[in-house]
Length: 431
Image 1 (cartoon, one colour):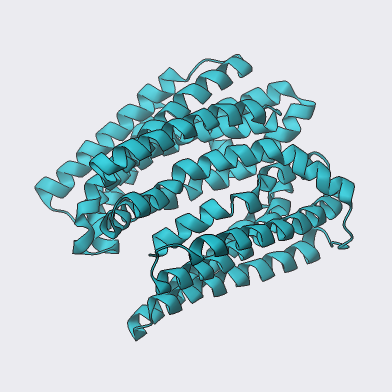
Image 2 (cartoon, one colour):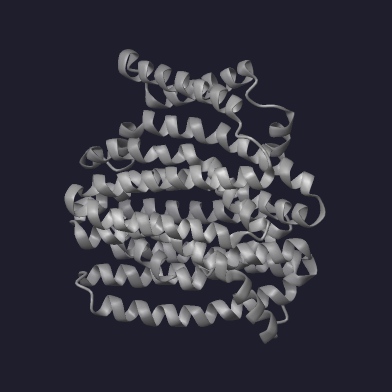
Protein backbone atom coordinates (compact mmCIF):
# COMPACT_ATOMS: atom_id res chain seq x y z
CA UNK A 1 0.00 0.00 0.00
CA UNK A 2 2.86 2.35 0.77
CA UNK A 3 4.52 1.49 -2.55
CA UNK A 4 1.29 2.15 -4.43
CA UNK A 5 0.89 5.52 -2.73
CA UNK A 6 4.49 6.54 -3.39
CA UNK A 7 4.32 5.56 -7.04
CA UNK A 8 0.99 7.30 -7.56
CA UNK A 9 2.21 10.54 -5.97
CA UNK A 10 5.46 10.43 -7.94
CA UNK A 11 3.41 10.18 -11.12
CA UNK A 12 0.93 12.87 -10.07
CA UNK A 13 3.64 15.34 -9.00
CA UNK A 14 5.41 15.26 -12.35
CA UNK A 15 3.78 18.64 -13.02
CA UNK A 16 5.05 20.08 -9.73
CA UNK A 17 8.64 19.00 -10.33
CA UNK A 18 8.48 20.21 -13.95
CA UNK A 19 12.23 19.92 -14.44
CA UNK A 20 12.89 22.99 -12.29
CA UNK A 21 15.53 21.16 -10.25
CA UNK A 22 17.88 20.96 -13.23
CA UNK A 23 17.08 24.25 -14.96
CA UNK A 24 17.33 26.22 -11.72
CA UNK A 25 20.77 24.80 -10.92
CA UNK A 26 21.98 25.58 -14.44
CA UNK A 27 20.71 29.17 -14.30
CA UNK A 28 22.16 29.89 -10.85
CA UNK A 29 25.48 28.09 -11.41
CA UNK A 30 26.20 30.36 -14.38
CA UNK A 31 25.33 33.52 -12.39
CA UNK A 32 25.01 33.08 -8.61
CA UNK A 33 23.25 36.44 -7.91
CA UNK A 34 20.26 35.14 -9.93
CA UNK A 35 19.33 32.87 -7.01
CA UNK A 36 17.41 35.64 -5.22
CA UNK A 37 14.87 36.20 -7.99
CA UNK A 38 14.82 32.80 -9.69
CA UNK A 39 14.26 30.73 -6.54
CA UNK A 40 11.38 33.02 -5.56
CA UNK A 41 9.79 32.61 -9.01
CA UNK A 42 10.09 28.83 -8.93
CA UNK A 43 8.56 28.64 -5.45
CA UNK A 44 5.49 30.61 -6.58
CA UNK A 45 5.09 28.53 -9.75
CA UNK A 46 5.44 25.29 -7.83
CA UNK A 47 2.78 26.38 -5.37
CA UNK A 48 0.37 26.94 -8.29
CA UNK A 49 1.24 23.54 -9.77
CA UNK A 50 0.71 21.89 -6.37
CA UNK A 51 -2.85 23.19 -6.27
CA UNK A 52 -3.51 21.81 -9.75
CA UNK A 53 -1.89 18.44 -9.00
CA UNK A 54 -3.72 18.09 -5.67
CA UNK A 55 -7.07 18.69 -7.34
CA UNK A 56 -6.33 16.06 -9.99
CA UNK A 57 -5.14 13.48 -7.45
CA UNK A 58 -8.18 14.13 -5.29
CA UNK A 59 -10.56 13.33 -8.13
CA UNK A 60 -8.64 10.18 -9.15
CA UNK A 61 -8.38 8.84 -5.60
CA UNK A 62 -12.02 9.61 -4.78
CA UNK A 63 -13.26 7.49 -7.68
CA UNK A 64 -10.55 4.80 -7.38
CA UNK A 65 -11.22 1.29 -6.01
CA UNK A 66 -8.43 1.61 -3.42
CA UNK A 67 -9.38 0.78 0.20
CA UNK A 68 -10.00 3.69 2.57
CA UNK A 69 -6.72 3.30 4.47
CA UNK A 70 -4.81 3.28 1.17
CA UNK A 71 -6.52 6.54 0.24
CA UNK A 72 -5.45 8.06 3.56
CA UNK A 73 -1.87 6.91 2.96
CA UNK A 74 -1.97 8.48 -0.53
CA UNK A 75 -3.11 11.77 1.01
CA UNK A 76 -0.29 11.68 3.56
CA UNK A 77 2.28 11.02 0.87
CA UNK A 78 0.77 13.97 -0.94
CA UNK A 79 1.93 16.12 1.98
CA UNK A 80 5.37 14.49 1.78
CA UNK A 81 5.50 15.37 -1.92
CA UNK A 82 4.55 18.98 -1.18
CA UNK A 83 7.34 19.31 1.39
CA UNK A 84 9.79 17.63 -0.99
CA UNK A 85 8.89 20.04 -3.81
CA UNK A 86 9.79 23.05 -1.68
CA UNK A 87 12.92 21.52 -0.12
CA UNK A 88 14.18 20.42 -3.55
CA UNK A 89 13.92 24.03 -4.70
CA UNK A 90 16.11 25.11 -1.81
CA UNK A 91 18.58 22.29 -2.47
CA UNK A 92 19.14 23.73 -5.94
CA UNK A 93 20.86 26.66 -4.24
CA UNK A 94 23.21 24.28 -2.41
CA UNK A 95 23.96 22.43 -5.65
CA UNK A 96 24.59 25.60 -7.67
CA UNK A 97 27.06 26.84 -5.04
CA UNK A 98 28.67 23.35 -5.03
CA UNK A 99 28.09 23.10 -1.27
CA UNK A 100 26.80 19.53 -1.21
CA UNK A 101 27.73 19.10 2.43
CA UNK A 102 24.64 21.02 3.55
CA UNK A 103 22.38 18.86 1.41
CA UNK A 104 24.01 15.62 2.59
CA UNK A 105 23.87 16.58 6.29
CA UNK A 106 20.22 17.64 6.16
CA UNK A 107 19.22 14.54 4.19
CA UNK A 108 21.08 12.27 6.61
CA UNK A 109 19.30 13.88 9.56
CA UNK A 110 15.93 13.42 7.83
CA UNK A 111 16.64 9.74 7.29
CA UNK A 112 17.68 9.31 10.92
CA UNK A 113 14.43 10.92 12.07
CA UNK A 114 12.34 8.89 9.63
CA UNK A 115 13.95 5.52 10.32
CA UNK A 116 14.39 6.07 14.05
CA UNK A 117 10.77 7.08 14.70
CA UNK A 118 9.52 4.35 12.38
CA UNK A 119 11.43 1.66 14.28
CA UNK A 120 10.05 3.00 17.56
CA UNK A 121 6.55 3.00 16.10
CA UNK A 122 6.89 -0.57 14.87
CA UNK A 123 7.96 -1.70 18.35
CA UNK A 124 5.00 0.14 19.90
CA UNK A 125 2.57 -1.36 17.41
CA UNK A 126 1.62 1.81 15.54
CA UNK A 127 -0.74 1.47 12.61
CA UNK A 128 0.43 1.81 9.02
CA UNK A 129 -1.14 5.26 8.78
CA UNK A 130 0.67 6.41 11.92
CA UNK A 131 3.98 5.16 10.51
CA UNK A 132 3.39 7.15 7.32
CA UNK A 133 2.81 10.27 9.43
CA UNK A 134 6.45 9.87 10.51
CA UNK A 135 7.51 10.44 6.88
CA UNK A 136 5.41 13.60 6.80
CA UNK A 137 7.12 14.90 9.96
CA UNK A 138 10.61 14.06 8.66
CA UNK A 139 10.00 15.72 5.28
CA UNK A 140 8.49 18.80 6.92
CA UNK A 141 11.55 19.09 9.18
CA UNK A 142 13.88 18.87 6.17
CA UNK A 143 11.98 21.65 4.39
CA UNK A 144 12.16 24.02 7.36
CA UNK A 145 15.85 23.40 8.04
CA UNK A 146 16.78 23.68 4.36
CA UNK A 147 14.96 27.01 4.09
CA UNK A 148 16.68 28.32 7.24
CA UNK A 149 20.14 27.35 5.96
CA UNK A 150 19.47 28.96 2.59
CA UNK A 151 18.23 32.20 4.17
CA UNK A 152 21.11 32.47 6.64
CA UNK A 153 24.05 31.12 4.59
CA UNK A 154 23.35 31.72 0.89
CA UNK A 155 20.52 34.02 -0.19
CA UNK A 156 17.67 35.82 1.53
CA UNK A 157 14.54 35.87 -0.62
CA UNK A 158 12.48 39.04 -0.93
CA UNK A 159 9.28 37.16 -1.96
CA UNK A 160 8.43 39.61 -4.74
CA UNK A 161 7.35 37.67 -7.81
CA UNK A 162 8.73 38.75 -11.17
CA UNK A 163 6.28 37.37 -13.79
CA UNK A 164 8.86 37.61 -16.57
CA UNK A 165 11.32 35.42 -14.65
CA UNK A 166 8.55 32.95 -13.79
CA UNK A 167 7.64 32.63 -17.48
CA UNK A 168 11.31 32.25 -18.39
CA UNK A 169 11.81 29.44 -15.88
CA UNK A 170 8.75 27.62 -17.19
CA UNK A 171 9.94 27.87 -20.78
CA UNK A 172 13.52 26.72 -20.14
CA UNK A 173 12.25 23.89 -17.91
CA UNK A 174 9.86 22.36 -20.45
CA UNK A 175 12.48 20.02 -22.01
CA UNK A 176 13.60 18.91 -18.55
CA UNK A 177 9.95 18.40 -17.59
CA UNK A 178 9.44 16.09 -20.53
CA UNK A 179 12.62 14.22 -19.64
CA UNK A 180 11.48 13.90 -16.03
CA UNK A 181 8.09 12.70 -17.24
CA UNK A 182 9.82 9.94 -19.14
CA UNK A 183 11.90 8.94 -16.10
CA UNK A 184 8.87 8.68 -13.84
CA UNK A 185 6.92 6.68 -16.41
CA UNK A 186 9.74 4.16 -16.58
CA UNK A 187 10.84 4.12 -12.92
CA UNK A 188 7.61 4.55 -10.91
CA UNK A 189 4.58 4.11 -13.18
CA UNK A 190 5.40 0.39 -13.33
CA UNK A 191 4.17 0.03 -9.75
CA UNK A 192 0.95 1.87 -10.59
CA UNK A 193 0.39 -0.44 -13.57
CA UNK A 194 1.08 -3.48 -11.39
CA UNK A 195 -1.54 -2.27 -8.91
CA UNK A 196 -4.03 -2.04 -11.77
CA UNK A 197 -3.08 -5.09 -13.87
CA UNK A 198 -1.85 -7.53 -11.19
CA UNK A 199 -2.47 -8.19 -7.50
CA UNK A 200 -1.17 -6.72 -4.24
CA UNK A 201 1.36 -9.54 -3.89
CA UNK A 202 2.98 -8.60 -7.21
CA UNK A 203 3.17 -4.95 -6.14
CA UNK A 204 4.77 -5.96 -2.85
CA UNK A 205 7.36 -8.29 -4.41
CA UNK A 206 8.37 -5.84 -7.14
CA UNK A 207 8.54 -2.92 -4.70
CA UNK A 208 10.65 -4.92 -2.26
CA UNK A 209 13.01 -6.00 -5.05
CA UNK A 210 13.47 -2.54 -6.56
CA UNK A 211 13.70 -0.59 -3.29
CA UNK A 212 17.34 -1.53 -2.54
CA UNK A 213 18.25 -0.67 -6.16
CA UNK A 214 16.61 2.75 -6.00
CA UNK A 215 18.19 3.37 -2.59
CA UNK A 216 21.68 2.69 -3.92
CA UNK A 217 21.08 5.23 -6.69
CA UNK A 218 21.53 8.07 -4.21
CA UNK A 219 25.27 7.61 -4.83
CA UNK A 220 25.27 8.56 -8.55
CA UNK A 221 22.57 11.16 -7.89
CA UNK A 222 24.69 12.93 -5.27
CA UNK A 223 27.85 12.75 -7.40
CA UNK A 224 26.19 14.05 -10.56
CA UNK A 225 24.36 16.80 -8.68
CA UNK A 226 27.79 18.11 -7.67
CA UNK A 227 29.20 17.68 -11.19
CA UNK A 228 26.32 19.29 -13.10
CA UNK A 229 27.10 22.91 -12.13
CA UNK A 230 30.74 22.27 -13.12
CA UNK A 231 29.59 21.06 -16.55
CA UNK A 232 27.23 24.00 -16.96
CA UNK A 233 29.99 26.46 -16.12
CA UNK A 234 32.53 24.68 -18.36
CA UNK A 235 30.11 24.78 -21.29
CA UNK A 236 30.19 28.57 -21.13
CA UNK A 237 33.91 29.00 -20.49
CA UNK A 238 35.98 25.92 -21.44
CA UNK A 239 34.88 23.17 -23.80
CA UNK A 240 38.08 21.24 -23.14
CA UNK A 241 37.31 21.21 -19.41
CA UNK A 242 33.78 20.04 -20.25
CA UNK A 243 35.12 17.16 -22.31
CA UNK A 244 37.57 16.12 -19.60
CA UNK A 245 34.88 16.30 -16.93
CA UNK A 246 32.61 14.06 -19.01
CA UNK A 247 35.34 11.46 -19.59
CA UNK A 248 36.45 11.32 -15.97
CA UNK A 249 32.88 11.25 -14.63
CA UNK A 250 32.02 8.40 -16.99
CA UNK A 251 34.98 6.29 -15.85
CA UNK A 252 34.21 6.97 -12.18
CA UNK A 253 30.61 5.88 -12.67
CA UNK A 254 31.80 2.69 -14.37
CA UNK A 255 34.08 2.05 -11.40
CA UNK A 256 31.13 2.42 -9.00
CA UNK A 257 28.29 0.89 -11.02
CA UNK A 258 29.85 -2.43 -12.02
CA UNK A 259 30.65 -3.64 -8.48
CA UNK A 260 27.38 -2.21 -7.15
CA UNK A 261 25.40 -4.31 -9.62
CA UNK A 262 27.48 -7.42 -8.96
CA UNK A 263 27.26 -6.91 -5.20
CA UNK A 264 23.50 -6.40 -5.26
CA UNK A 265 23.11 -9.66 -7.20
CA UNK A 266 25.38 -11.44 -4.73
CA UNK A 267 23.45 -10.52 -1.59
CA UNK A 268 19.91 -10.23 -2.99
CA UNK A 269 18.62 -13.20 -0.97
CA UNK A 270 20.24 -12.00 2.26
CA UNK A 271 18.91 -8.45 1.77
CA UNK A 272 15.34 -9.64 1.24
CA UNK A 273 15.54 -11.91 4.29
CA UNK A 274 17.13 -9.27 6.50
CA UNK A 275 15.03 -6.26 5.51
CA UNK A 276 11.63 -7.76 4.64
CA UNK A 277 11.58 -11.26 6.13
CA UNK A 278 11.06 -14.78 4.84
CA UNK A 279 7.73 -13.85 3.20
CA UNK A 280 9.64 -11.78 0.62
CA UNK A 281 12.31 -14.31 -0.36
CA UNK A 282 10.51 -14.70 -3.68
CA UNK A 283 11.64 -11.14 -4.45
CA UNK A 284 15.35 -12.11 -4.26
CA UNK A 285 15.69 -13.31 -7.89
CA UNK A 286 13.76 -10.20 -8.97
CA UNK A 287 16.28 -8.02 -7.15
CA UNK A 288 19.13 -9.91 -8.83
CA UNK A 289 17.62 -9.16 -12.24
CA UNK A 290 16.92 -5.51 -11.41
CA UNK A 291 20.53 -5.15 -10.24
CA UNK A 292 21.53 -5.03 -13.92
CA UNK A 293 20.27 -1.45 -13.85
CA UNK A 294 23.18 -0.51 -11.58
CA UNK A 295 25.62 -1.46 -14.35
CA UNK A 296 24.19 1.38 -16.42
CA UNK A 297 24.63 4.24 -13.92
CA UNK A 298 27.54 5.62 -15.96
CA UNK A 299 24.75 6.60 -18.33
CA UNK A 300 23.68 9.20 -15.75
CA UNK A 301 26.59 11.29 -17.00
CA UNK A 302 24.96 11.43 -20.44
CA UNK A 303 21.77 13.07 -19.24
CA UNK A 304 23.58 15.67 -17.17
CA UNK A 305 25.98 16.38 -20.04
CA UNK A 306 23.15 16.96 -22.51
CA UNK A 307 21.38 19.19 -20.01
CA UNK A 308 24.49 21.24 -19.30
CA UNK A 309 25.14 21.75 -23.03
CA UNK A 310 21.56 22.89 -23.82
CA UNK A 311 20.76 19.66 -25.69
CA UNK A 312 17.98 18.66 -23.34
CA UNK A 313 15.55 18.58 -26.27
CA UNK A 314 17.41 15.67 -27.85
CA UNK A 315 17.68 13.94 -24.49
CA UNK A 316 13.94 14.30 -23.99
CA UNK A 317 13.11 12.99 -27.45
CA UNK A 318 15.21 9.85 -27.00
CA UNK A 319 13.81 9.13 -23.57
CA UNK A 320 10.26 9.83 -24.71
CA UNK A 321 10.56 7.17 -27.40
CA UNK A 322 11.99 4.76 -24.84
CA UNK A 323 9.15 5.58 -22.42
CA UNK A 324 6.57 4.76 -25.09
CA UNK A 325 8.38 1.49 -25.75
CA UNK A 326 8.54 0.71 -22.03
CA UNK A 327 4.87 1.53 -21.42
CA UNK A 328 3.88 -0.71 -24.31
CA UNK A 329 6.00 -3.55 -22.95
CA UNK A 330 4.52 -3.12 -19.47
CA UNK A 331 0.99 -3.30 -20.84
CA UNK A 332 1.80 -6.44 -22.84
CA UNK A 333 4.11 -8.30 -20.46
CA UNK A 334 2.56 -7.61 -17.04
CA UNK A 335 -0.75 -9.37 -17.86
CA UNK A 336 1.20 -12.36 -19.24
CA UNK A 337 4.20 -12.62 -16.91
CA UNK A 338 3.17 -10.51 -13.93
CA UNK A 339 6.00 -9.12 -11.84
CA UNK A 340 8.67 -10.70 -14.07
CA UNK A 341 7.28 -8.80 -17.05
CA UNK A 342 7.65 -5.55 -15.11
CA UNK A 343 11.22 -6.35 -14.02
CA UNK A 344 12.29 -7.45 -17.51
CA UNK A 345 10.87 -4.30 -19.07
CA UNK A 346 12.61 -2.08 -16.53
CA UNK A 347 16.01 -3.64 -17.25
CA UNK A 348 15.50 -3.65 -21.04
CA UNK A 349 14.66 0.04 -21.17
CA UNK A 350 17.61 0.85 -18.88
CA UNK A 351 20.06 -0.94 -21.17
CA UNK A 352 18.68 0.72 -24.31
CA UNK A 353 18.84 4.13 -22.63
CA UNK A 354 22.46 3.51 -21.62
CA UNK A 355 23.62 2.39 -25.07
CA UNK A 356 21.81 5.00 -27.17
CA UNK A 357 22.68 8.04 -25.04
CA UNK A 358 26.30 6.92 -24.64
CA UNK A 359 26.72 6.70 -28.41
CA UNK A 360 25.17 10.16 -28.82
CA UNK A 361 27.36 11.80 -26.15
CA UNK A 362 30.56 10.18 -27.39
CA UNK A 363 29.94 11.78 -30.76
CA UNK A 364 29.28 15.20 -29.24
CA UNK A 365 32.45 15.02 -27.14
CA UNK A 366 34.50 13.42 -29.95
CA UNK A 367 35.72 10.73 -27.56
CA UNK A 368 35.77 6.94 -27.59
CA UNK A 369 34.19 4.51 -25.18
CA UNK A 370 36.59 3.53 -22.34
CA UNK A 371 36.84 -0.14 -23.32
CA UNK A 372 40.07 -0.58 -21.38
CA UNK A 373 38.53 0.68 -18.15
CA UNK A 374 35.44 -1.48 -18.76
CA UNK A 375 37.60 -4.60 -19.19
CA UNK A 376 39.64 -3.95 -16.03
CA UNK A 377 36.70 -2.93 -13.86
CA UNK A 378 34.46 -5.65 -15.25
CA UNK A 379 37.08 -8.30 -14.50
CA UNK A 380 37.54 -6.97 -10.96
CA UNK A 381 33.76 -7.02 -10.42
CA UNK A 382 33.44 -10.58 -11.76
CA UNK A 383 36.26 -11.86 -9.53
CA UNK A 384 34.66 -10.09 -6.57
CA UNK A 385 31.27 -11.66 -7.32
CA UNK A 386 32.45 -15.25 -7.71
CA UNK A 387 34.73 -15.00 -4.68
CA UNK A 388 31.83 -13.67 -2.64
CA UNK A 389 29.57 -16.44 -3.93
CA UNK A 390 32.15 -19.02 -2.84
CA UNK A 391 32.36 -17.43 0.61
CA UNK A 392 28.57 -17.50 1.02
CA UNK A 393 27.77 -20.91 -0.46
CA UNK A 394 30.84 -23.00 0.33
CA UNK A 395 32.28 -21.42 3.47
CA UNK A 396 28.96 -20.21 4.90
CA UNK A 397 30.45 -16.94 6.13
CA UNK A 398 28.15 -14.21 7.52
CA UNK A 399 26.97 -11.80 4.85
CA UNK A 400 28.56 -8.77 6.56
CA UNK A 401 31.95 -10.48 6.51
CA UNK A 402 31.48 -11.32 2.84
CA UNK A 403 30.52 -7.73 1.97
CA UNK A 404 33.59 -6.30 3.69
CA UNK A 405 35.81 -8.90 2.02
CA UNK A 406 34.31 -8.15 -1.40
CA UNK A 407 34.93 -4.42 -1.01
CA UNK A 408 38.56 -5.13 -0.12
CA UNK A 409 38.97 -7.58 -3.02
CA UNK A 410 37.52 -5.15 -5.56
CA UNK A 411 39.63 -2.26 -4.27
CA UNK A 412 42.84 -4.29 -4.42
CA UNK A 413 42.08 -5.51 -7.94
CA UNK A 414 41.30 -2.01 -9.19
CA UNK A 415 44.62 -0.80 -7.80
CA UNK A 416 46.47 -3.81 -9.24
CA UNK A 417 44.85 -3.36 -12.68
CA UNK A 418 45.35 0.43 -12.52
CA UNK A 419 41.67 0.85 -13.19
CA UNK A 420 41.67 4.27 -11.54
CA UNK A 421 44.05 7.18 -11.93
CA UNK A 422 44.80 10.51 -10.29
CA UNK A 423 42.04 12.26 -12.24
CA UNK A 424 39.41 9.85 -10.93
CA UNK A 425 40.68 10.13 -7.36
CA UNK A 426 40.59 13.93 -7.54
CA UNK A 427 37.09 13.75 -9.03
CA UNK A 428 35.82 11.56 -6.16
CA UNK A 429 37.40 13.85 -3.59
CA UNK A 430 35.77 16.95 -5.09
CA UNK A 431 32.39 15.20 -5.41
